[in-house]
Amino acid sequence: MAPTDENPVVAGVLLAAGGGRRLGGRPKALLEHRGRPLVEHAVRALRNGGCGPLYVVLGAAADEVRARADLTGCVVTVNPEWEAGMGTSLRAGLASLSGTGADAALVLLVDQPGIGAEAVARVRSAYRSRAGLAAASYAGERGHPVLFGAARWADVAAAAVGDRGARTYLRTHRDAITLVECSDVAQAYDIDTVEDLTRLE
Image (cartoon, rainbow, N blue to C red; front, side, top):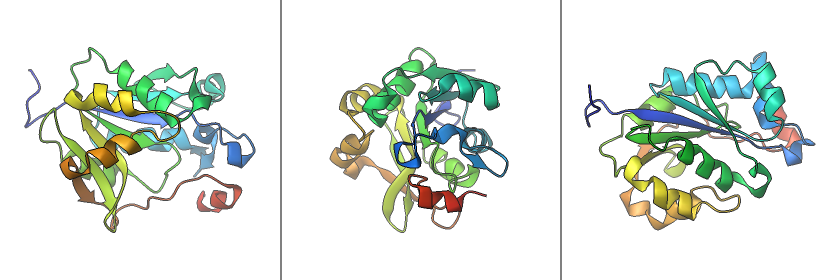
């Protein structure tokens, strides 16, 4: 059955390439949370939130991540340019969707374990068309996950430079974004510094 606007194919794209520079070079994907690597928690959030197929972009310590984390059912892409910033990983993730027929990509970051399946499901449900654009918001502030309709992928990728990811594109197109309040079901903190590690269990 061909996908329709009522039953869209929303691929989950997890950006998990970061090297954790401010964490002493500990790859973020392998930080432990509740006994398992962060990358597994994020994959589970995408899957349980209704996304599929699932795509994971690795970079730092990619071989070790593959060996230690259960990424069953995921298409894994290794971004050789991960050190140049998140923009390269976003481009790699969107490029991996080329030709899949997916209607949209829902992008999640590996270092935000406070964002789970409920927030993913809410943003996914905001899909309206292949030209759609939606994002979680926290007390009115735009955050992740972000949903990009397939018609926007080329322009998003073109604007994704350095460590900004899609920030420039989203700022330019803010009037087109459907904001989905998620602060009652998720927390949008990042694991960026050694101090942030206290948020992991």
